[in-house]
Length: 220
Ligand code: AMP
Image 1 (cartoon, helix red, strand yellow):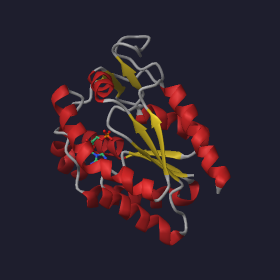
Image 2 (cartoon, rainbow, N blue to C red; image 1 turned 30 degrees about the vertical axis):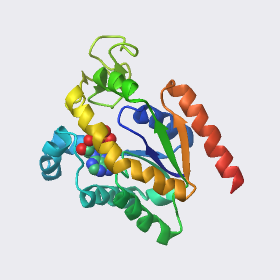
Image 3 (cartoon, rainbow, N blue to C red; image 1 turned 120 degrees about the horizontal axis):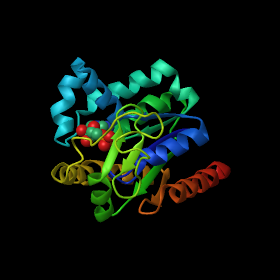
Image 4 (spheres, rainbow, N blue to C red; image 1 turned 60 degrees about the vertical axis):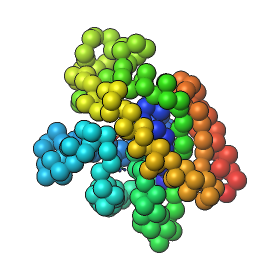
């Protein structure tokens, strides 16, 4: 399957993406993870994008679209199936994705839209801790690791993303509303949008999406 995952930062996209990836056996590609990896390596791309990412703004469209195109061709993902998380984030990126997929007759199957309220988003993001090694997500109130500061999965070091502070979260939400919300309309018009409320827990959200995906597959 070829899927994109949409929704504001903190809606729970990363957690849901891991569940979908394991269930559907497709690769999960997060442009945010790729950019953080490049920043960690201090590669030319990482150095170029660090100040933009740290202040919660969007990296230029051509840079992120190139990242996705490279990923697609490296792993033959257009044929194998994928779940894009954090891309597209602007209408231009959504149009460019269609321009890559449609000529190959491998269009996107669904756009999964995980919505969440502003209050829940701020609570989730300010308390979020992430494993530096495997990306597993924890929370200081409701998802504590067994050993403080260590990942349960791989024993990696847990850290707080520099853009997970209240000031930057507000910028990221504003950027989301301005740039990303029009994509919802774009996929709704294509009749590809499946929406689920992300204020609920991740297992429930996953079940809801699987039900909706299966319904769509049956109707085709
Ligand atoms: P995320 O992990 O998805 O919250 O992404 C973290 C940051 O990476 C964002 O706040 C942006 O600065 C940058 N980023 C990730 N994906 C994109 C994208 N598709 N377009 C532009 N910037 C992006």
